[in-house]
Image (cartoon, rainbow, N blue to C red; front, side, top):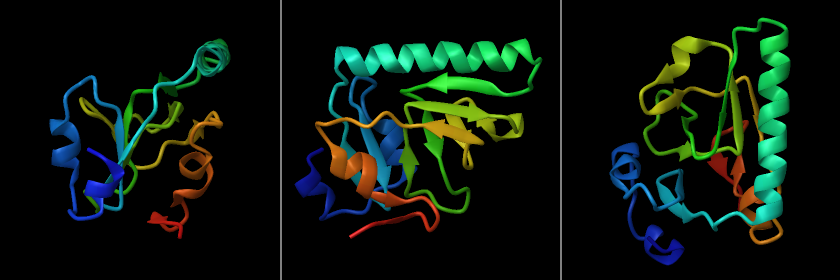
Length: 134
């Protein structure tokens, strides 16, 4: 779905989960936003941080689980209009985990900024309110 067509419809998490597996989009406030394929350096950083984070938690016998993208995070349990895919999600409240991903905010996320879409990475959503920034 293009960003232009997303502005004419309001979508829900069921629409998100109906997307083909190879399509990478995030659903924010009922709108779909296409995610560009990450570059090699982005993936190298993501792999390093994922391994380091998981190893640290495991070395401390921590109860948390670490998931790299793509991993669906439904930020607000009461809303079905926002499902995002942080680069790395750390979830310590394992009751938030479902077969589809995580329902509720992770305890910690890592988002690797991308020069190809800084407007999305840094501006698109205010996580305090769950609303898209203007």
